[in-house]
Length: 345
Image (cartoon, rainbow, N blue to C red; front, side, top):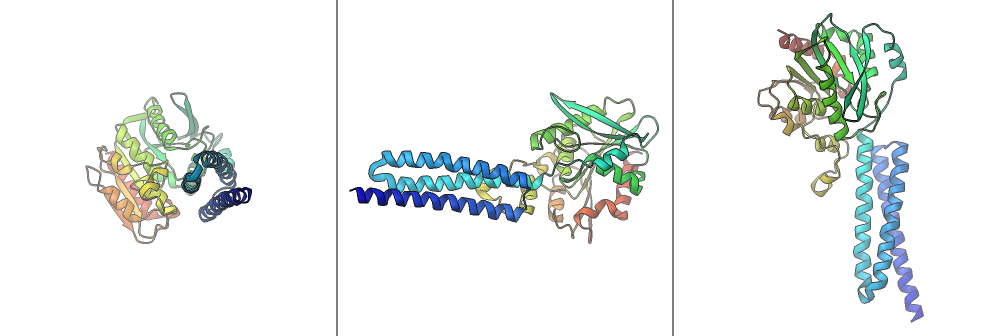
């Protein structure tokens, strides 16, 4: 009898060990594939081992009480263990791949003291968001509120636009860009909820300024920022909407990086950003710019999103612009300039 008990316990222990190793190797493969940041590695591994510890304890306790049913029960709980651990790991890795909070101190320093650059703060409830307001026009003027990509802080974008002369594209308009939570000097961490709150805070702050013509506010979004731009356009009165390399939903955005979020795995996506749903409430005809050479957000996503706006968008599909080169392409800048002039008439 003692010999049989030892075998049973050894079998169960080996199974649990194999289960844990499988989860670790699965996580390692996911992390290597997504090239997750080191901090994500550490946090995910801690959560992984915590899950293994908890579920292993449940397995041992249930198996001890199950009598003859302990073997199938153990197998069932091991499967649950694997599914739970891998699901948590995938979800965390997905967010780590999507968001890259950063601050460009060099760009920030070039804006401080520049007479046309004003550092601003907006509030939404208890949350605070910071960014920059560019006095690109004299007196009360129309305004462009811009939302950047997942690796872009406000200081980087504005300093780059000033250095390259791209601010002239917004001639006649002031320009404002707040940082997402965790980016620039904005506190907090990025998520769909916090980023949508930031978008609302940006608009609600802008309309309080005496130098903003509140009847001619244009929302601009690039890449990940097109989700916030489309959402805000569905919630507030705007004069125009510019979407550069937009996606149709957060699921598409995740799958463009790691194509596994289908079926039940759809529920692991935290940043859902259903731009298709928001587009249906937008009351202006947007400008949509995309490219068949965009290696990050496929042009078919942008084309699909365009079908959901009540007013037909001005859609332009370029043949050879990589994802990071839209604002470095003169033809794209000409489209933005022409659209802004049209809104400002």
